[in-house]
Image (cartoon, rainbow, N blue to C red; front, side, top):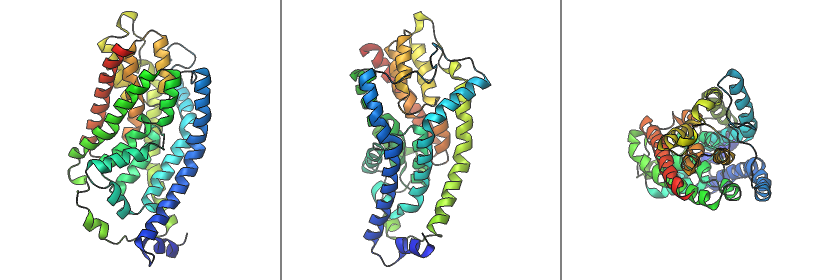
Length: 359
């Protein structure tokens, strides 16, 4: 697309409503095509498999073994290869959409719909996450792109957290493989994290937050700073340089340390309070592909761990991870990051307490 064509889309004589529709439709076409190939179509067959076999395969933590391998360079590499083989398509799509958010979606439209501190913006961000079905790391670049367009902290967080914890496909898999009790717990705590925690995170925004009254910003003309291709390549390059290296390194480190993070405790302490705390913290930091928490939980249950540990992992494993937090750390105030991490750990502890009773 030439600079003139791009300028005509953003600031020419075409009415604002027509420009907005055209840009949003173009973004949606790319997003729908990518999600169909990476997520929706594969998950259809995965759902059929889960319904027929009541299994999603081996745990990514342990493979076919009963415990995770001892920390080593080899265990780090082995986990990294399995992990990246599972997520690389979604990761590429996430970075692509995160960069396109910044050049295709008009700022004025985003500010009107997702730019305020109120619950409506947060709710819309959470609802928009549902078709994505991405893990926290793959959704992180899109959340970063939204923040760079001045989308509110509540709406950006709701999109980021809602992708993994309210993933409709994962809920279907979970019902077939585990039970409806797990699915119900996941939905309840997923809603709390996606909508309530994200909304209250606005309180920690400080001066980085878009104010409630955005009409002056909305009415200002948008001034493009170059051709579409130039802007897109610049944003894509920035994301690749700031996100990929830390992402790769932290995945390897966590893969090496997984035997320490998820110890096989003695039979007498398998459902103890200490075990729930350990697994809630470990689950918050650890990184997994979409729906990988299901075989992980199934494996721990088969080893004799009770519903407390299962409940803690149910919400903490998918919600966030150390790599995904590092990916979004520059887009959100530090207080918001700590608030989200604390909320995920607390949700895991509460879900674990309930799980110890009902599972």
